[in-house]
Length: 306
Image 1 (cartoon, rainbow, N blue to C red):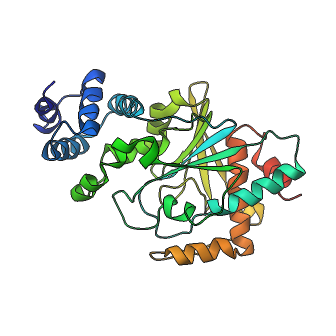
Image 2 (image 1 turned 135 degrees about the vertical axis):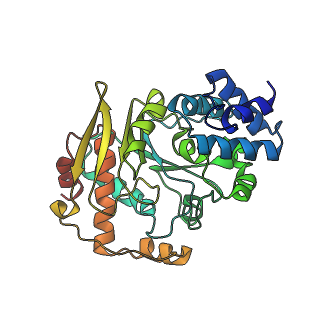
């Protein structure tokens, strides 16, 4: 179908706009990824679609279309950590600390099924500057429990949109769906939402691709917790909310950075403070709960610290 029809469907104003059918979204995204639509057409569509607001049905069809371009590589016993592809400015990444924590945990808790962590990364995407998972991972040693998926390898077509997305300089539907595309075919997935309306959106959009998906309240588009928060899961068709307080686990952390540098982030994880280590362990405790390795957060925490 002519791409101009898709632009017209989302960009003619309140009276003329309409929701696109699944086959239309899938065709539009295919044309975008294959670059058979021009850059001007792609930009016009993405901005107009964002302004009109994408429906859950459209986003689900978008995910399906992108998955047709993905090269999958299954990682058994894994949970996908849905990090944002935007930059990170205010906090370090904790995941470089997860490997040693998990290795020690399984030495002490052989009765718990092992859990591998899957992280994806790529070039920095809009809408802000900062560090990316890719930059941090490239400075890590090889790991047993952490698997990094470079989007340049598993979905080159989406990665190649980076320059155009930066020229637009705005968040688009790609920012919404790219965090949990699950190239590892993980049974479990976790991503973050800071605004409540996105909780049901993420659970709906990605729920069909995971045995269990969790949305956790965290900052900077990362499933790493630095403050008191909560998480949500869909259980028997109902969204269940669970709150947690770091002080209940003896954690007090209030540090924030302004445009943290790569070297600062590396220094933090190479020489972690006691509080940073506690935070890293607490996040592992969350993942163990999210992946059904333990029944409660308290059990996970006790086992991590025994």
